[in-house]
Image 1 (cartoon, rainbow, N blue to C red):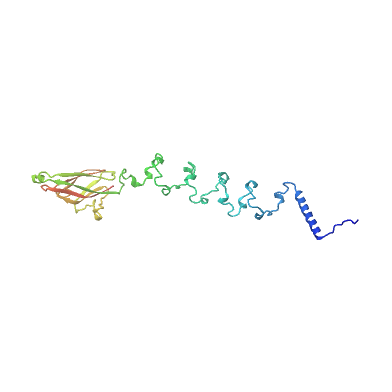
Image 2: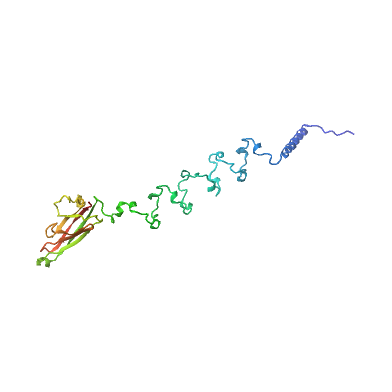
Length: 292
């Protein structure tokens, strides 16, 4: 009986080598104890982005403080990469958020806690009139004594403060009436019309008064009516009353137009009709007073 001897072929050799390599590799892998490969066993630069599967590195696999600013590439962290609530105040370094890093209109009123903006947090001149909405400042928002005379435009208090030295007030007047036919024919004392002028702003002292007839002459203290007879002038401490219309008066100003009274608030005027002349009588004009 002949013994069967297997015949050595190329295919048998290759199959045997493959089996050996496979069993040997598994034996090597199986021979590594658990957790035997750590950061110390990995060469620097061995783990590259291409070697890491997508989403393989999660927050649970990153040690605290392992990712620093120096390890992040440009635009590595974008708003779309951050989940809601990931960045809170405890994760921000002191002075990390500056005015230059905040875009316009990012911080709106609905993102501010009540009383978050205090007086101490507002820079000097941080709130100007241009930053205030129409009607934003109401009486209820003003503290007692917050509005003082020094904080108001000087013209606001013109009606309660005396006229300043050198300032001039101007106005118009019109005074008259009607003399009946019976009064004119009877030759009785002609009627008199009376009125008053109140200064828009009180004077500190009672002024001196000069009444100027229609057409002048103009004394030094009352030098004229100005352009269009609408800018009458008066020297400091004087009230000048200029007549520009005189109709059926007893004489001319200052005889027909007289001053009944004068003080720092205004004057009283009187105009007398011409004797034995029926119909309307009138005196009108402009005035000016300048504080000394």
